[in-house]
Length: 72
Image (tube, rainbow, N blue to C red; front, side, top):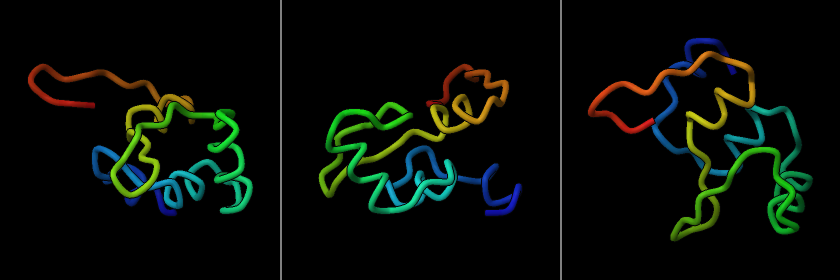
């Protein structure tokens, strides 16, 4: 994933995208999620897990500021 792609992620992403950002494989990511050990907070979704862009950025060590009137 390029820097521009990373910076333009939607507010939430599916688990496959989050796995790619974090650098873990699909099987490992889903196993960690199922055990409650995923390295980033998971959001329940209608069709599986979702991960917030904000939490991914924090996990990667980016300085993240919430802007007034917007969801992170």
